[in-house]
Every structure is written in structure tokens, then in C-alpha cells.
Length: 229
Length: 258
Image (cartoon, rainbow over all chains, first blue to last red; front, side, top):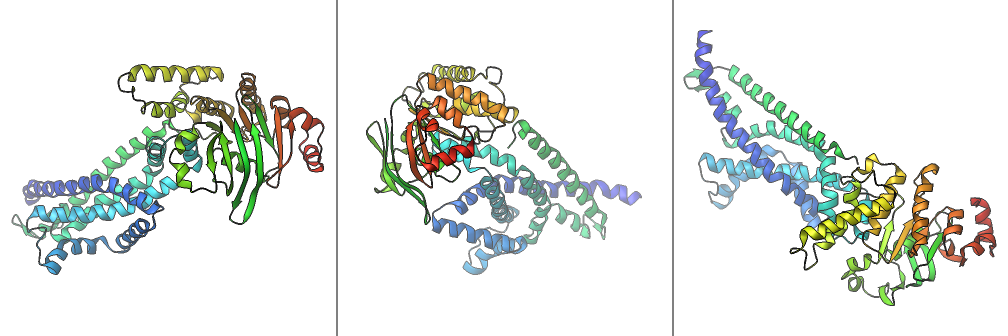
């Protein structure tokens, strides 16, 4: 018991540092993938065939391969194939590579949710806008966007919760997120070796974090309850 | 003021409109009747530029609005301006669910006002005028106590009256109705028909696609009866309903019971 109490502050301190990295990756991925997903969705819905085929192919490849391998390819490819150490060797470079992989991956999944949300809006909304002399972009931003957001909050919430836990994959390229920090104690970090319990503690961080997100996303859903579709 | 010349429309290989020609005078109310699938809604949608006819020309005030033979791009250039000649009230209302009744009426007018050269200088004044007019229109539609309600808080009849106010807010030359009461319970159709009747009394130029035969007879000046994509009979409203000339119209009228 005594050793546990001695070890606890060290473990928590280390997990906090890892969690900060997890949080950072989570926030950056969301900020990048939420808008990028919309652009990809519009690309896959355009009538201009080349763009449509290109975006659909990208979505197919990204959704059709494991995120873990995408991470490895994005991080190691420049060095291996072009002998260009694009990402550098520091933690910052690894973070950037992870962020790029996560943003692209999540944007592709989100784009399909956006597409469903947009296509579910009755064509009468478009037509009402057209006969009222609105431009295409006015119809999109003033009429359809909020209706789409209302439709997609539940499935996007699901993706967001999944993202929290997917960030753990970033340790494949040695990004020192929270699982990395917890695992380190198995291997003798800070003079603590063979301790598996820090990993369970890491799970608690995830649980609390997703709990907070669930409440926030529920609030957003409530907020959009002022109208019905 | 409106002239439709030899309009023809195919969906794939199916002919839905065949050689449709008619004219509409300022202040006239025209009803289009016919069974489902007779092409009356498609005709209205062609006039409102929601469908592109396969053949034919449409003029408004002697200005060429659409010529199906010429490349589409030539007409798309100022298509927004052309849309503003018409107001269209849909069968399913198509109100914007995230806006209140008043905002539904104001939205398009506000967006258009932003393009005015004096918008920046007189922004507050312009917006206030738009808001006041929207309120006036809703009051005219008997919706004075529903101005700040959202569409889902309104009955079908109230929603349709908001939709009429929304169309009127842009001061269209011709107001079109696509079966405006078909989605309503019988007890709610009366309130919608009443506001259309009031508009007719104010000499609003209107085209009404409808299933309400007695309404068409009483309110319209002229009626067009369509069947299988063609105009079968056309004439003064009362005469056409009370004294049909063709077997098809006689047949139709006995089926729908005026």
C-alpha cells in the first residue's frame, strides 16, 4: 500500500502529460476534419465527374484501410521513399504527422455522414429557395446547413466519441499520448517497473473525458430542438 | 402578360406535356384542373422554371423568359431575376423549419436587399421596413398571433398561409399555387381558400392548380382542363364547369363531384 501511495503522484503526473497530448490530438483532429469533411462531402456530390470520382476514390481508400497503417505510411513514407525527413525527428513532427493522418481519416468518415444529412433534406427546401430567387450558396448556408447539422449531430457524436479512443493509435509512431505514458510503467519508467495498474487509470481518463463529451453533445442536440424537421 | 407557346415536356421517353399554349392577362385568375398525372403540376413547374421544357417558349410582358430550343446557359444568366416574376406556393408548404413565421417571410427579401447599392448606408432602415412589411403580410393572412411561431408549432392551414405571405413578400407579378390545399384536412382548406379569394378580389394575377372544383368555378376567371398532358378544354370558369363541351371534361366533373 505504501508503495502505491508513493507511486500514485508520479503515475498521475505522467498520465496528465500523456493526456494533454491525447487532448491536443483530439482537438486538432476535430478542428481539421469537421470542415474538411464538409468539403469532401460537397466534392462527392458535385455533378462535375472528375472531382466526384477523385473524392469518392480517396474516401474509398481511406475508409478501406486501417488507420494504423495510414499513420505509418504518412509518417515514414517521405523518409523511406524520397529520403526526405519531412516530419523531422522530434515529438512535434510526430504530432503533426499523426494530426494529418487523423484529420484525413476522420474527414472521410464525416463526409459520408454529411452527405447523408444533406441528401435527407427534402428537395422542396431547395425549390422553395430557388423560387424565392436565392443563390445556390444562400440556399446552402441559410436554408440547408442548420437542417443538416441537426440531422447529423447523433452520428457525428458517435464519431467524436470513437475519435477519443482512436487517438491511442498515435503511439504507433511514438507519439507520447496517455496509453504510451501508462505503458511506460510496465517497462520501468520513473523507477516503476511491471506496474499494469497505470493502464487502468488511463482508462479512467478516457471514461471521464467521453462522459464530459456525451453531456456536451447532448446539450447541443437539445439546443437544436427549437425546430423540427 | 404571360404567354406560353407550344410547350412540350418529356420525362425520358414519356410525354407529359403536349403542345400547351395559353395566355394570361394582368389581374386574371386562371385555374388548371385535371386528374392526377394530367400534367398540370408539371406545366406549373415549367412556368416557374423548376422544370426545363423540351420544346416551346414562354414570354412575360413580351420579354422572352425561356426558349427550350436555345442553349440553357443563355437563360441561366439572369435566372434569379426571372424567378422573381413568379411566386410559388407548394402543396407541402416547404417552409424553412429553423425560422419563425416572420423570418420565413423576411429571409429572401433580406438577402435581396443586401444587393442594393444603398444597403450599407441605410441598413437599419431597410431591415425595419422589411420586418414591418412581413408583419403586415402575416396580419393580412390572419396570423397576427403566430408571427414568432416556428413552422412545427403551426397547423397545416397556418403553415400554408405563411407560405403565401412568403411568396407575396417578393411582390411577384404572378402568384402560382400548386394544389395548395391537397395536403390539408378538410376543415383547414377553408382558411387557405379564403386568403386566395381575398387576393383574387385585389386583382392579383394568379395561376391555381387545384382539385377544388367549386373553388375554381367561383374564384377563377378562366379554367384550363388538362388530360394526358394536353389542354382539352379552356374557357370562362362558370361556363366551363356548368356547361362542359367535351366528354372527357363531363366525365371528369362527374367523378370529382362539384
